Image 1 (cartoon, rainbow, N blue to C red):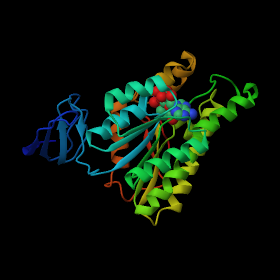
Image 2 (image 1 turned 180 degrees about the horizontal axis):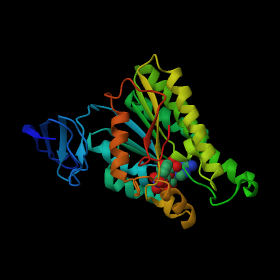
Image 3 (image 1 turned 60 degrees about the horizontal axis):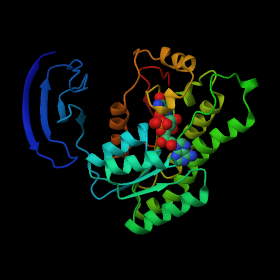
Length: 304
Ligand SMILES: NC(=O)c1ccc[n+]([C@@H]2O[C@H](COP(=O)([O-])OP(=O)(O)OC[C@H]3O[C@@H](n4cnc5c(N)ncnc54)[C@H](O)[C@@H]3O)[C@@H](O)[C@H]2O)c1
């Protein structure tokens, strides 16, 4: 590989949460190797935007968009909300944990926030209709709310009640939110839905029947919805992370976490920044020819 040129094309000085951004073009004769400072690797000649916090961000256009994000008070949901805030997306944060939600609201000053449980279909319907009526649009839905239920347990020992409660949150919850967001998206012939699934839904994690099966159901729903709305301006995709150290993972038995992390060929966990960066692209207007697809974020674990 040989570096041919680096040109600064644009410098944008932001205010508040908006980063200082440089649009630069790097021309090489081959691939640029991994650069820890920027988190970029193996990019061909092209354009990237580098930010003050050393994370790169893409030049995505979310002008005037409204996003509903569930599980927004913690982990991936909060990281995705923070990322979309950088693009000035109007955020509506949903979480059942009032205290955590209050902290997220203080941090991000969203346009709206609702402390509700996504298993409550009527509450979800009321929230979506109020949001759609207020803004006349719902452009983005991120389903990040999720639970693992009891893990590190073989199938013959799994309590049916535990299986049902995990399905209720992970599958039914995501079904409820998409059911009531879709009419608003259809009205404007535009929408981006991202269901946060899991590598467990593709590969199956021993000891995690409820979680793996519920995430497989989410991936199935993504394929169905992707096809159903393919001729509209709506795309429906999923994300399948391996392990990212969040409250959800910290609450699991260490033995189960070791089982999952040992399977990652890169021999490290994913980061919230990696998840949020990939989500931002999936949710952007630029992601216009991919639907019904499950994006991989597994450090090489996924085999299909
Ligand atoms: N962290 C990982 O390694 C990992 C890997 C694969 C998939 N995922 C998925 O990513 C998503 C986010 O997980 P996370 O790691 O950020 O977890 P997290 O526990 O940090 O965040 C989940 C949030 O969802 C909320 N929530 C849970 N049930 C809810 C309900 N019924 N109604 C409303 N809110 C509810 C919680 O209060 C919490 O704030 C989940 O769907 C999870 O299954 C996580």
